[in-house]
Length: 128
Image 1 (tube, rainbow, N blue to C red):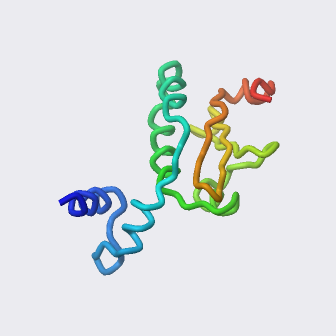
Image 2 (cartoon, rainbow, N blue to C red):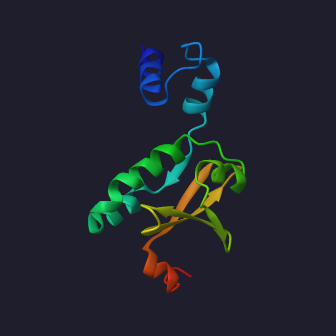
């Protein structure tokens, strides 16, 4: 029963393979290897002050949670404007209005949220 529920959820979120079948690799990738993001609470706190950031941050969270990035190049395949700055990865959010600064531990598949800033705060170096 639990597996059937997972399969229905995965199909709804990620679709199926070209043949229309949810494969074992879908299951392994999206169930067994989901990324731990620490912490979503920081995203919620930020969008409570910046409501226009809620939708793009939720979208980033959904993608990052099920990403299997082994390095910055793989993260850039999904987010081409992601940059490495002093050991952190910086994502542009909502058309570069906001900056999401994270530390990605690729080997452990953990993302630590360091800061969420407006573009002006980022340019002033508030997070450094």
